[in-house]
Image (cartoon, rainbow, N blue to C red; front, side):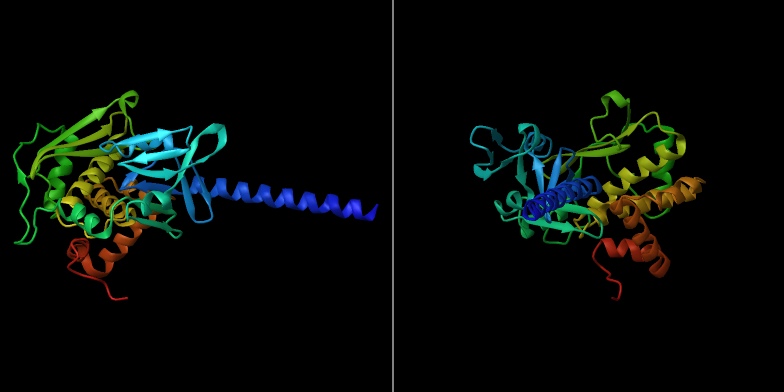
Length: 312
């Protein structure tokens, strides 16, 4: 009788531990932001330890220009000629390990627990550095400059104010072929919490398109912030982004939004953004504000260009 009681207690404890593990993995997944080649992954995910598993059916949104096939029967993914084994999850969905995805192409997998982000790259360090530096206008003498061959479209008043303010702040983007589009929510194809995004188009080394898309039902202060944030990304990529992780790129864009909003009298919007609970945004912004408080605005701009490193 006593043995049966112990067996029951043992089975109950095992079940309870498994339940806690599953609950912990689900909670961890909800807290994290996942980026594949600097694009946010919005499909289903789950964790096994530090490794994230990505829903295969959502991968075409990330690998838009690559040869991608999903074989449910063989339980594998074929990406640019490479076979990557998958596993089946809830509802019969296929999931692929982010770590396996990166290693198959000699890329990089980074789980940053402090910022609660996972960065997955399917190309190596050298190619990643080339991808980042390829957007710079102020490249060294050994690198060809990008030609700007298109002209800006007439900008809406809010966007014009943002561009003018950024120029006065020394973060000018007016030389780029800008087009700002306000989209209805029904046409907004990004994540449900997203307020904007920007797209760039190239023909060889010629920049032919630079579009910013913003939700049109935002109040004026939030709309101002969203435009400044997306144009901050543009400036970051075109002027020497040496830090390719999301913490730096999103933090810098948030900092630009903060600078523009405080200049235009939207201080409440700017202050609110410093409390963003998503680490790459809130902590990223606070990092750049702290950097500016110590080394001024020029120090921030030199930092993102790789010309200055604060003392440890």
